[in-house]
Amino acid sequence: MFIAFEGLDGSGSSTQVGLLTNKLKKQGYKVFATKEPTNNIIGGLIRGQLTHDWKSSMECLQLLFAADRAHHLHREIIPAINDGKIIISDRYFFSTIAFGSIESDREWLLSLNERFILPDLTFLIKVPAKECLKRMTNTRFELELFEQEAKLKKVWSHYDWLSKNFANVYVIDGAKPIDEISKEIFSIVLKKVHKKFSAPNVEKQEKK
Image 1: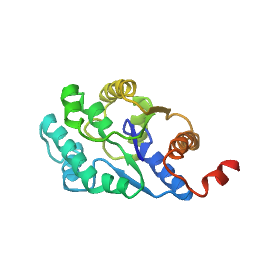
Image 2: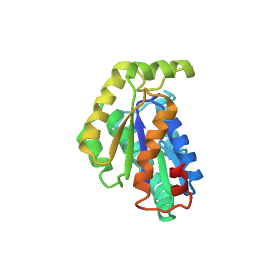
Image 3: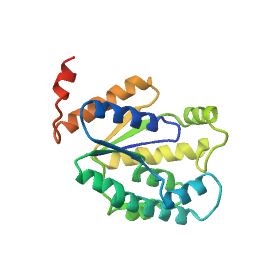
Image 4: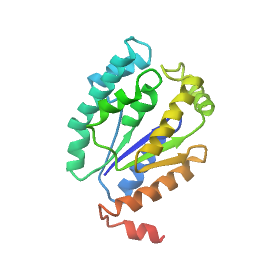
């Protein structure tokens, strides 16, 4: 099974990836947690542009994202799927469309990603742009390329379009307490996972 988490920067997706990973491991499932951009060479180039260390055109940046994703799938995600693991990715191609559509053509971005596999589940964490910026400014020294309120509002509008045009997308209220969000996500995942896997601790855990 392949699960992706999406949302604005500061929405708490990374926190939820960690919580879901730990819960599934406790249930006895094999889990592989990953993220995009990756920590590979192409991912490093992407992060360099996001943090203003170097600059290229938006088209170049989006091509790097696609190349990083192709490498990510080939070297990590597909092998983990074949090994029977549950893959949980902090960002996937929805991020490319949502953020990239600010300055690039959406149809072109979709065409770049049309051959990539789709997640079995996508969780879209919804938090207002202003709140996301507040969270980020409280924890960082500087903001990245897309982290401005006007831009983040546009990004969310693109996420909203994606949620209505792709299957298996769950929009989660990210303003709720972290534990409540985690419980909601875990409940959805367990229902889906039970159809593909069987773990010895699942029934016992649910009866408590």
